[in-house]
Picture 1 (cartoon, rainbow, N blue to C red):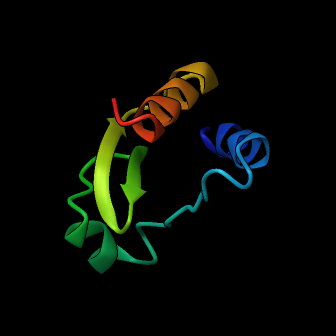
Picture 2 (cartoon, rainbow, N blue to C red; picture 1 turned 135 degrees about the horizontal axis):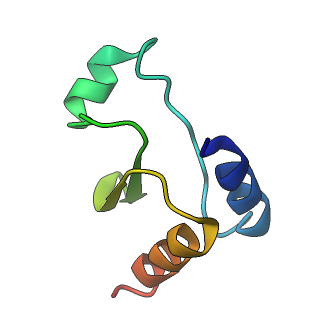
Picture 3 (cartoon, rainbow, N blue to C red; picture 1 turned 120 degrees about the horizontal axis):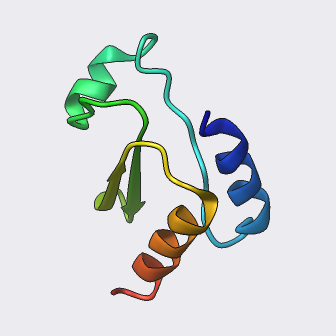
Length: 74
């Protein structure tokens, strides 16, 4: 459900952010280490540290606004 939104954001924010997806069924140890308990979960990283989290499906505008807020340090 979120794949098309993430693909659009990866394209529109190219050069500003990197978008990556993790299949929790294939990488349960990574999901556990990151504390992912619900799907979908969007984690925002900066310099390897989690700076934001969104749990549940959300429209593109909401996700994009959250990303841009974090990039501005808000």
